[in-house]
Image 1 (cartoon, rainbow over the protein chains, first blue to last red):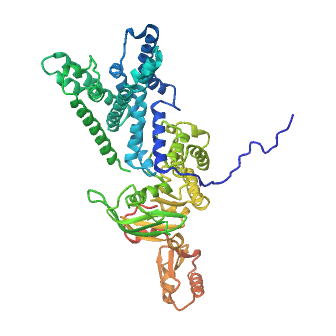
Image 2 (tube, helix red, strand yellow; image 1 turned 90 degrees about the vertical axis):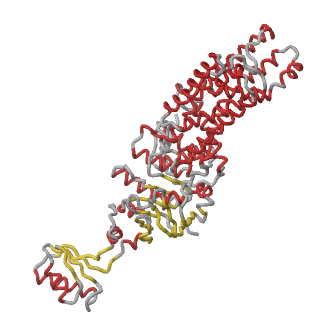
Image 3 (cartoon, helix red, strand yellow; image 1 turned 180 degrees about the horizontal axis):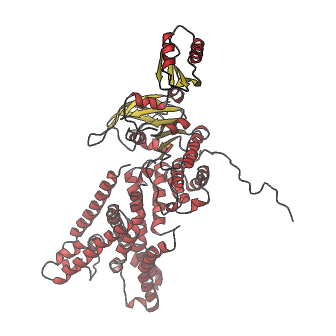
Length: 294
Length: 311
C-alpha cells in the first residue's frame, strides 16, 4: 500500500485571479436571462415538485396528438379526432394553467426581492430584460402550442402508406401550424407577464392570470349560450377565443365549439382584437418596468 | 485618466428634493471613501455613475466613459453592491452568482469557475449550495459582494456594505474591502455614513453633505496635525492656561485640557514644552497627556454646524 503524501488535502490560497477571457456583453446577458428563464419555467435545477406542473401540462398537451397518431396507424384515416385547426382550442384549458403557474416564476421574485438593480447595473437595459423574459415564456409555451401539433403533423406523414404523397398533402398546413403556435405562445406570454408584473407575490400573480382566463371564459360561455343577439360579445371576453379568431383569420379553418363560430363577425375583427391585447400587454410591461426604481 | 469625474452634477427629484447640488469631483485612488449622513446624496451619486439614474444637470464619467451616453459600456466594467436587500430567497448562492456573472457577459464555463473563486474569497463555503433565504445577514452581505465582484470589474461601487453586520462581520467585511482595493487591483468606491469605518479602509476621502461637496482629499490630510499642543492634567487646568498666556503663548483651557498653539509666542516648539513643564511644576499639576492635536474627521461635519449623524 502506498502512503499518500502529507500535502494531500491541503487547500492553497491561490490569491485573486483576474479575468481576461471573452465578455459577451449585451447579447450574452440576454441569452443568459432567456436560458435561466427556461430553466425556471420547467423547474430545472429545482425540486421535483416544481417540475410536476410544467411537464405535466406538456404531457397532457401532447397526449391527444400521440393518441390520434396511434389511431391513424391502427385504423387508418377513418376517424380524425384532432385536426390542425381545432387542436389548440381542444387543449385550451392547459394554456391558462401553464401561464398562471409558470409565468410568475419569471418576473415576480426579481421585482419583489429587488433583484432588478443588479440586472440594470449590468450591460442590459430594461427593454432587454423584459424582452428576454418574454422570449423565455414564449419558447416554453411553444411546448404546448407547437410541439403537439408538430407531432400530429409528423405522425400523419409517417402513418401514410404513400409517404411522398403524404408529404405533398400535409406540407401546405405547416405554415399555419407554426404560425398558430407562435401567435398563441407570443400573445399569451405577453398577457401572462403583464398580469404577473402587477402582482406582488407569485400566488397573487397566478390567481390573477387564472381570473383573467376563467372569469372571461365563464362569462363568454354565458353570452355564447343565451342566443338573444348578444353572441357576438362572447369571443372578446376570452383571450383564447380572440386568439382562435385571429388564427382563423390568418390561417383559416373553423372550430365548431369556439364562440367565434356562433358570433359570425368578420374574422379581421379578431386580428385587431389580438393586436390590441398584445399592444396593451406590452404597454403595461413597459410602464411597469419604467417605474421600477433602481 | 481619472477614475471618476463629475462636473456640476445636480439631481433634483420630482417633488423638489435636491439630492446633488452642483457636485464637481476628480477621483483617482484604490479605495475611495464616500462619506456623508443618510440622505446626503451618496446613493444618488453612485446610481448616476452607474448610468442607472439621469442627472438633472451636469455630467459625469467613469473610466473616461460618459454616464449619459456610454452607460452600457460602463456597466460592463463595474460592479455594484446596493444598500438594500437584493437577493432572491429560493436559489442558492452558487446558482445566483453564476447567473449574475453570465448577465455580466461571461461565458457559462468562466461564470461557474469565477463563482467558485469569488465565493471562496468572500468566505462562503458549504452553505453556498443552500437557498439564500436561510442565510444570516452577514452571509447575505457576502453574496451581495460576490455578485458585484464575480465578473472581475475594474471599479466596485459598494453602498453601505457593513449595514446590519455585527462587529466581527463588520471587521471581516472591511478587511475584505481593503484587500480588494490593494491586492485585487480593483478600484473601490465605498459609501458609508460611518466615518470610523471609512477611515480604516479608504486612502482618499470625499465628504458630501446635502448634495454638496464638503471636501475631497487624501485621508491623511483629514487627520493631519493641527499645529496645536494638547495638554491634559489631573486637575482643572485654568491656572496653567493663564500662566501660559502670561508667557505670550496662545492657550485656552477646557476642564482638565489645555490647547496651546505651537506657533504662538516667541519661543520655539521646545520652548513651549519647557514652559508647560515649568508651569506645571510651579502649580503642582501632574501631566497626564502631552500630544500634537490631530484633526478628526468629525470636525468636518461639526464645523458646518450640520446635524450630520456621523459616528
